[in-house]
Length: 325
Image (cartoon, rainbow, N blue to C red; front, side, top):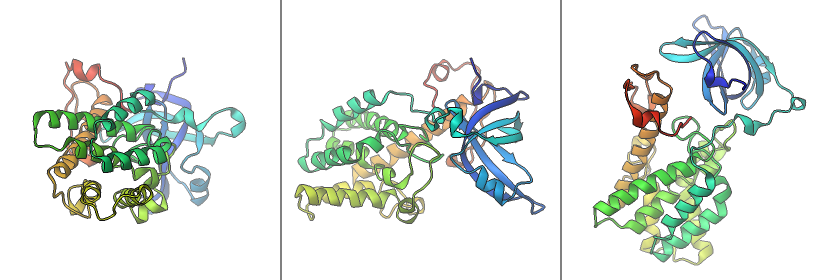
């Protein structure tokens, strides 16, 4: 069986076909150009630097290009990287498809779709239910295919739906424990809160931010989609029900410094923000731990204020959990 990118150990040389997931042309301390690259296949991602580069190299080895990578896996500052010996662009005649290099969420799409629909069936408010149904029908193909982010968390095919479903499961636990929670509003908010990412991101392969994503952002984009859905469905645009759902998505980042145009002003909006933050953190830390040897610390995680986490030598729950990326 052929080795994949993450099957190699430190010190092993490799000659492997991979996808360039991300690329940036940078200057080193001596002002020489190099390419900071992120390589990936179905097993995961590893970074590497292509030294003594030029602008032509940046054009040749661009994001989304399939390449033959010859190099050696090493560790640098506690993180794995590839020492690049050579790169060659793989031509279309060589039989490789982009889908071969995309990591998918750990649960099947059909099963996630069925469970999300079961949560939607529990939304009793007709305004919220009709809008969520409308948006799932309109954007469903992308919703179940797209990642939830470019790199920080759930950055895999189907990651957006997986993140949404994980949040719904957490929301159920909270609603079962606290009777004062409006379950319908919380479930509806969970399902649509990040749906604007189907417009903010380019897709699951070599994910980039779109012009809409960079200029507007997914919070405002989904608010616009909610209003367009309400208009098409003949819902009163000044109704309180519509206003509450809009507030859920516009406040779910929780803080102004995190890009939230409004702070949570509903109990359910506060919970949506905290569930979103919790699920992203659990995913990011778990993913890092799964790539860390037992008895050692993870690399510093930028999404978690550069904290490092220890992987216990005996941790059967983590050992038997779904491999995320």
